[in-house]
Image 1 (cartoon, rainbow, N blue to C red):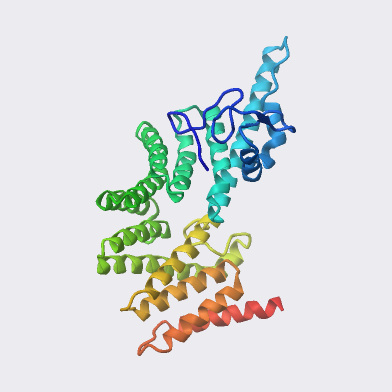
Image 2 (spheres, one colour):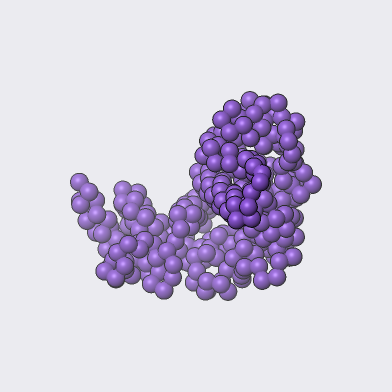
Amino acid sequence: MATRRGPGGEAVEGAGRCELCGARARRRCRRCRRARYCSEDHQQADWVGIHELICQLLVPTSTSLSAPLSDKERKHHTEQLLKRQKLILGLASSRAQQLVLEGKPKEAEPAALCALRFSTQVYGSGSVQLVPAYITLAELCRDGGDLQQAAKYLSQAHWIVLSTPGCSAALQALLCRHLGLLCAAQGSFEQALYHLSHEVYLTSSLFGPRCVEASGGYFHMANVYLQQNKLEVADSLYAKVSSLWHGFLVRSLQAQPRNARSQPEMSALSEAEGAPLTAAQQAEGVWLLTAVLGIRGQDPMQKPEETARTLHALAMLHYLAQDFPKAQEVGMQAWDLVKQLPLHHSGEAIQRLLELISSKLSCTK
């Protein structure tokens, strides 16, 4: 989607400007009478992307104050307006993340632009609260091949982070990942490794050396080394990804009965001393492990032990996410492979997992 944006990367605002590209708008939503568009295509894209969810919520944001109002009434109006703007911002951010996870980058762009606009209205143009929206837009541009626009968005996010004392390590790590991915897409491999290794450092410092949150950084570093044909280093990092997830999921599986007794409302995907994985983290885990399997399948010098461990981890992840048919399918692949190995120490663990899966499947019949 071709877009025209302001100097900071945001959509150009003002009366009569298109919600998506900032061009002069000749169309307007008939429902809210607020959103404007330069074409029917952009209006339809915005409706599918976000506007359908927020159309009626936009009406009060454009309602002017009637005079005279007391200070108390004016304060109440301002508080209600801010509350509604934050609601719209939350809906737009969640919608953008959902569409990105579903692999629909074009559909996600209207929601991401909306999140950026309302973040600016609520928090101001230099607030750290804008960084997630800038990063999401950069990701969409990078995936769409517009590296120049992606760099502009990340430059804005980077400037905000550098200008914000005490910015959270989690947000800095997220920025490092996307700076690394952009550098890798541009062919600047050394710079990509610098940013990605810094992401791993920040994440490990925040969550601990065994955290699965660092697995994405290791995976993207492995991809950079693979592009440089440094196969041994890449292989060791892919193994690190599998190891982190395998260890975490074994601990989660062991803690499941205890968690079920003490806190039955908790997600099964939780470490005894840690917080539950979010839906986004679960999706990332499935994506990472599946990607590692795909890469190992193309390697002429395959390491069956590593492949079996990755399959075992993926089966556990599907089991704890309660996708039992998929867990059984992947678990059987792990078992078939591990039986061919001369020493299959993980065989008993895989068998126990398959028994758990079978019991769950029998209960659903």
